[in-house]
Image (tube, rainbow, N blue to C red):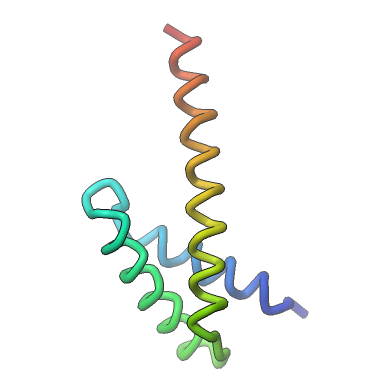
Length: 79
């Protein structure tokens, strides 16, 4: 059985996978991800609060930023 944090993370990952984050502003991306996460919740039979969705998005963006930094360092050292 999955806990609510895992379900929120799955919803975030699905949303990010369908949105091109490089082509829109951060504010628009946050709104699009939140909408997609709420759609995931409705489809899968879960209920998320706006606060839970926002916290997941903030944490997810922090993780993505760290990943990008690692990738940038890796590609820089490979040159």
